[in-house]
Amino acid sequence: MRRYLPGLLDAGASSASTLIAGLAAARLLELDQLGAYALVFSTLLLAAQLPTQLVLVPSEARLVALESSQRVERLFATVRSAGGWSLVAGLATLAVGLTMTPGVDATARWMLGATGALAAFASPLQDHLRRMLHLAGRHNAAALVSLARLAIVALILVIGVSAEIPTPLLPLGALALGDMLPLGSVLLSRWSRAATLPFARRELRRDGGWLLASASAAPAAGFLTSVIVTWLAGASSLGVAEAARIVAQPVLVLAGGVAAVLGPRAMEAAQRKDEATGIRLNQRFWALLTVAGLIYVGLTLLPDNINPLARITPAAFQLPWLAQLSVVAAVVNAMVMLRRSELVVESRTRFLAVCEAWAGLSRGVVASGATWWHAWTVPFGFLVGGFVRILLMRRHRG
Image (cartoon, rainbow, N blue to C red):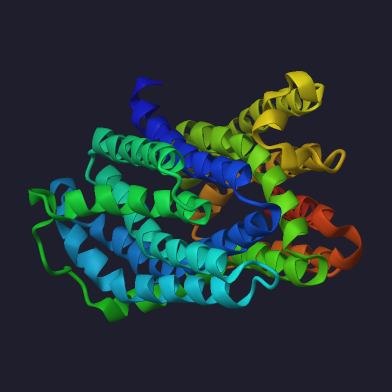
């Protein structure tokens, strides 16, 4: 267990940073502003796939050929190669924040759009930094980066609230600074002194296409759902759904931490074609998630006067059973985490892309009913997409 502790700290602290920012948004923003935040955040997740999948992940795969001590030295070069795509991601996020949130105050749109753009630019580069540190065997350093990010996000939120900084600037602005400050400190260090890459950039295009298609399907479906709900049901409905999604987020944080421990073993089993071990690890993962999900649903069902979640995010409990449905949807979608890793090891990225496309399409179909279902559209579509993933990615097919 101790060998996986840095990975658990890395995944947990990174997810906790996003969770804290989301809780701050749900607590501080008005409902229509929270809906705009949800749309900008879903855009950020989608746009960040451009630098991540087209440049950063293929680069990481090729840098494995170097000695571990030499990999992180290429960080400056990889960040520079992805900088153009990160800029595109930031501009796209700003454009969506300004143009696709009708009914929201123009000043709030600018604040959310601008801070979202900074986060979209920096987030994929900071994630790449941590993956590069893991590749170099500096697992403790990767965990420290995530812990520093968590501390920065929390500190900025506390200072921002105390100084009465306009609330639309705080959630995504804190995330952006939490990404940029650790990244800048490492880029200026002796670790990243190599300015060139040991391969041509054109080599990245071959793998980047399928990786982008696979990784973008889920955030694209989330973005499409957010847009449809905003336009058909209003930003306030999306705000209520976003509050419920944030309440359910700890389930995904827990799943990410457990996957950090079991994932490497599942990938090794897939590499050896040891199906029995893979099945056993997946079953253990599912059992842990099921128990955790049941406990967490029970927590959401506590009376409002003793329910800490209802006190922190009251908007999530405006509609009966919305928070509970969001938790169940999160559990169902987390079930495939180990299976996704196995498919990558098995070089089945094209099949993975097809699975994600069908899951995304199913969410889009559900979203078309937003006029009638309002906030329910978001968790229900997520739940349907999760079941589609499970059915398509199950180990025994055909």
